[in-house]
Length: 314
Length: 180
Image (cartoon, helix red, strand yellow):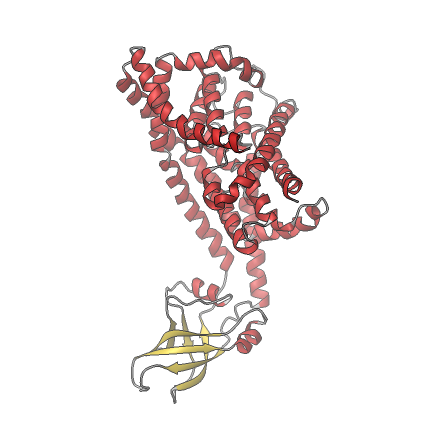
């Protein structure tokens, strides 16, 4: 199933990007190559031979609305610089420009920190009415999905490597717990409770203790501890696995209990976002998470009976 | 409720120090060479982190592309009339779609919703409940199964998604029941 979902995500993103870009093309969303009326006000004394002028640029609401055919855009005055180059007169908006769509996309897509456009004609007075043409914008979403793929691949590595510290710490502590007999004691203590969910794990197996630790960490909202503990539990379950690359029933159960998230304490991130409001949500989160945990466990049990998901007979 | 919360607050604050000290201390009492054993175990941390990289790259890059393509808006529009019939407000649909895919994305959605509707709004409560009661399913699958090189995930994905979808509905109804 993951194969289909994964492939589906990639193919669908291409389809949606194509639809969006095709729509931009047909609607000419960015009015490529079409001049937009602007008024340029010179801040310093006007001298037509100067190479650079500090200017204010005014684009009116009515011009923007009729140009882009969108009644929601409002005009404004922005600061910028006017450059007189061999190629003509170029306007550069200041970097902190608060431009709105679709100008924002036009600026982002042309890839310069100072948004640029070419001005037509020659300034004659300190208040110069002219038109501006931006560089053509095409394939916005195509560029976006390609960029996102690379960004997220890098994020993935950062995330994975960021786990090293926590993983190392917990793997070390757990090794001590194993060597001191603590884990085994935990297994003996908790297996009557936990084994009904993991019937295929043998009696007194250390995996049971790790599962308990993982679920407890989740329960208390200790996400940073839960991941290493869960991974360690998976490693123990893998020692019982006869195949190398296929998940076993206990693995799927543990995973489902983790994705359903058994927490009673709200996750730290949510507490940070919601502040005091989180107290009100305590009950709604506990009730929802308990219900979804029950559904997850039931789903795992029922789905494992389906022919396509049945464990290869051992 | 406040006593329960207070207890949990203490528990979650004290559990970690108790483990950090308790495990080695108990080891010492049982005559374990704690330092040597710790280092032996900690070695595995690096190995595991490197093992999961290909899995996490695979999942995250596909999700990143999907988000960047604008498919989310399209899906929201598509689902609006369907889920509207069973009482799910359209405002919380993006959260339902994004939550199993990315954690940072869903945080962004809650922040947007707080800006748009205010912290007190029932939509924010629903979205926050969804956030608090589910996990980023695909990332968890990549990390947990990646660490042991499991590629054939069997019913893990459907089971996770069924629980996620259920949790989305449950969050809406529970919040409506408690606050509506």
